[in-house]
Image (cartoon, rainbow, N blue to C red; front, top):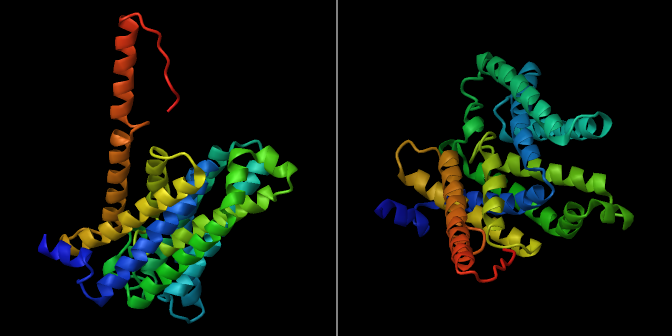
Length: 314
């Protein structure tokens, strides 16, 4: 507990504090961007884009090695992940609009294909010269222990860019999410906004590669908005609460990981986010399990007493 208190009060050292700040910004950006993805019913797309980062990372390493460059450069690996993520987003959009596939089916196809290709390329990269020492496997589940200070700065910078873009486009995202037909009649570029939202999801995925990992970062995009939705309904407040829950998940998760033996930060961050969702599911005053059970008990008592039953919408 003493070690955890030291980290939580920012007395764990400069490098630990930098990683804490980066993970907190990551959680904040993931919560805000994930809110608009949830409202637009694009949460599964976030999962597909996180899986699509794997072939980009492995492909970038192989391409760099083939041309005689070092494949261990994090910016190069992130560029590969961004490229493959955007290609996956484009593939989902094309399959949805130009075929008879539903959006969830198109997303599932791209997710499975991307991850299969990524697994093959990752195996080739790890067998290549220097591949075993490049730390590619650490990007799958996250590896804060191997993060350099400049990597944490890069994570924080990407998170800030995603957060700023989400704030600037938040009103337009909300209109499209709640009434696409109205958005089109008012001249909003719906297709461009959907592409921008997918790009922001990809950017958050990039930011979280080393801290959370490409397979777990989707939890930061889903759990905080889902938990916030149980407490509030107004969009701006919803995004703010989701961002706060994501920030708490990142901060507390890294702090716990720094003090617990053999506890990967990515997995701990996800567990903290899941715990916050579980608490919200139980304790929310209007939509929580306790509140719902109490309402049902009151209604049942009123019905047995022959009183009129009027249930207000939560």
